Image (cartoon, rainbow, N blue to C red; front, side):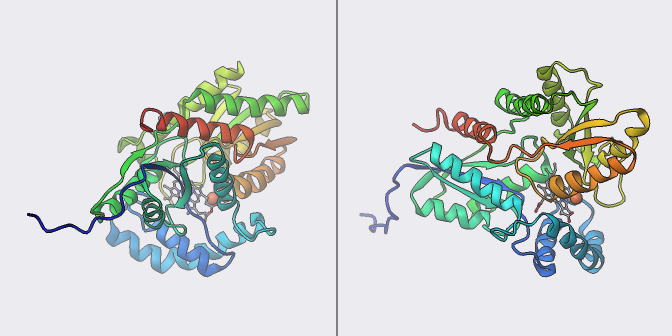
Length: 337
Ligand SMILES: C=CC1=C(C)c2cc3[nH]c(cc4nc(cc5[nH]c(cc1n2)c(C)c5CCC(=O)O)C(CCC(=O)O)=C4C)c(C)c3C=C
Ligand SMILES: [Fe+2]
Ligand SMILES: [Fe+2]
């Protein structure tokens, strides 16, 4: 006879849904911003330069200069009412919204960098009886710098487990009709309220080094598909809807055209009324609220532009929740026995 094994509790067959966003400083302080940037920018999926070159540069130069600059930017958008960053707030609101729609599932969020950490949340979900966990990286377009690093972290956790849950990773939804329709509805509602058409609609996505294309990262192509499908849905030409890339970091060439350069050059071309969307972000954050809605808009006006309306991310709006609920529902279909 085998020796009796001390069995862990029998599974309750629950399903877990773990939404994972990038991460954000916990507090509005230089050490907090530095801690976040250190973890984020030390990830070799994010900065692919040789470690021996990059880590000294990061630790000796960048982490001494950048956190102060970033803190000034975060302080412009920080939520005073609940003392947290918008990214964290909207990620939590989305999680609550999905939990309300998916009774029976354990719905939680984690951050790839900082807290709540992915391994802690995975462990909690297993403890709560989840033997199937759907992980949803909160990025409509796939990139190795965002999605793949979430998957790496999930599997680092799984590697240490004797009893692993089944895990499924949600696919990016860059061309899903629910997503395109949600963006369209946002634009149509804005134009109706304003009772005038913009000269141009800019879709500003987070940038990546241009080299990502050579490396096989599909991000650029997925952004272009989102842009084309939205233009088609709106009945607009490729000229009226333009895809640009923001948030360049470091001296390398990044995906182009650069949002900042386009914003500064449009007024001289007679494009004076524009509408800007940031469809690569699920939730508003420093990159959308500070870089675009404050800095980018200011630069456009300073260059002679008349109106630059910036739409919020889908966030926890009814449309935003609908997109995420659709993604979760479709991923779980067939998996929920
Ligand atoms: C090499 C650097 C970076 C790559 C590659 C990169 C890819 C990437 N990032 C997002 C989404 C977000 N990035 C955010 C902030 C942010 N990104 C970088 C650098 C790279 N991003 C930095 C240095 C920062 C920090 C902010 C700053 O100091 O200016 C955020 C916002 C976080 C917040 O707290 O508000 C998001 C979201 C995507 C989607 C992406 C690749 C496609
Ligand atoms: Fe980024
Ligand atoms: Fe930025």
